[in-house]
Amino acid sequence: MRAAARRRRAFIYLALSLLYLVILLFPVYWMAMMMVKPADLMFVRPTEWAFSPTLSHFEYVVEHGFLGNLGTSLIVSIGSTLLVVVIGTPAAYAFARFKIWRRDDLFLFILATRMAPPVALAIPFYLIYAKLDILDTHLGLIVVYLTFNLSFYVWVLCSFCRDLPVELEEAALADGYSRAHVLYKIVLPLLRPGIVATSVLCFIFAWNEFLYAFLLGGRSVKTLPVAIPTLITGQGVLWGELAVVGVIAIVPVFIVVFYLQRHIIRGLTLGAVKG
Amino acid sequence: MAASEHPNGPARREPPPKRVRSRQERRDLWYPYILIAPTMITLVIVGLVPFTFAIFISFHEMTYLNMGGFAGVDNYSKLLGDSRFWHSLLISFIFVAIAVPIEFALGLVGALVLSQFVRLRSFVIPALFIPTMMAPIVVALAWKIMLAGSWGLLSYNVLERFGILDETSAFASPDLALFALIFVDIWEWTPFMTLAFFAGIQSLPANPYRAAVVDGANALQRFFRLTLPMMTPLFAVIGLLRLIDAFKVFDTIFLLTGGGPGTATESVSVLGYKLVFEFWEIGRASALAVVVWILFFIFCNVFYQIAQKKLKAF
Image 1: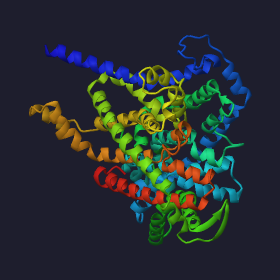
Image 2: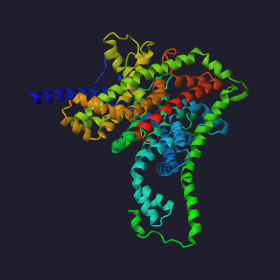
Image 3: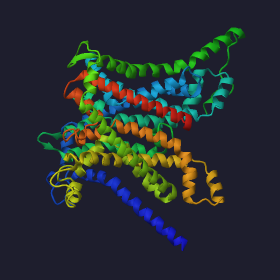
């Protein structure tokens, strides 16, 4: 009797989970379908479920230079991520290992830059960039992405650093290694999984970012997320092309995420969950 | 292991021992500061300098991008006297107050279901990452396709069929637009809450549960007496994190409603954007930026205190 009841309960949960999955995945599926749906069938009423696929939307996207936006997205995201790794790794290690004067206050300062509302920062950035004449440049976006990515990186990598056994470093120091040697030969190799996971998240944040890219870039330097609203024109909305650009913008992210699932939770919760 | 390359370590030079030690010590004292210097300098440049600049501008008259004379608290009194500003705060507040608790509750339910049913995990967890990691602008796009116009899949097949809306979209209706945005936010962020809570439950120690089972505690008792107390700090941290991010939401609102119809969905972020790039009220926008910053600094401090004292996570 109890076994039957339990099986029935498991079945209900399974059904509910499947329903939830449909709610989660259907909008994405429906958008992906629109990549190959002919424009005239897009929103006919009643809804058309079966159609013969077309590649015209892809042609439009290639012809109108959206691959250039893909390139811009790649340059900006990779550039800012590399910069973050180089600048941030030593700091994360130092915060995890050493006594630092007013450590808590400094750490709170780092967190505050991560939490900063982009709109509040974008305004002064816009004025400063206008003065320095670096509006609408790759450099400008790479620098502004440091505001959320560098602080995020230091904060999360610090939590990874704290998991490393300090004994290895002490042993190496006792063997006469210099501090720099210890960092380079002992700490960095052990920290590599953490660095990879955290920097991948930085890459994704930069890749997904919209507001800064929209306000501080926008004409010659246009990332994929910024390219999306440009397809909503006065003459009408190019839904199929929108779908193509949207899917291009999310596929690389999914590929990376599925490889690194566990670490990503830890990163997204700023290290609060050990994952 | 890298250490095996030099089994005895690099050869040490042998200068007079006393002086070397004090020099070594002094260098050790500076070492952490050398490591954090690049980060701190960068963050001062990209964080503190713009922030200070925003404060500076907020006390000046601005005509377009040109700075005029000192204006005292003029910008602030104009901003705080503007009902539109308070309205945008209210909109942000409603958004957060409805979306975050629902995401929290649904996320917790999801996490409990996942921790009960092992077999669900392999296919549910990867799917949960999809909305979490998608660019918010693409989330907005997907839902625009579902709900926009009278021709969106849901607007036509569900909302209109059941007589909720007629010949219009949820995003164009003054009554429903905000709730449609909240719905999209819940869709986007519940999976993240589920993942975070699930990971938290997984990392709880097993022994208290074994003891509870031996003592005859049922599932409800175990949840309220064990899971809930042990998870409280984590709840606080994740809830606050989500709160702060929800307060900042811009991308989805921008693409789905642009703050409209009228000002029905004009959150603080959207108002800040409009002040600069539509009305060119740079002075008032800077005042808004400073006010928002102060709010966030308070949030942040609370977050940090809880995270550090209770969770010992950071």
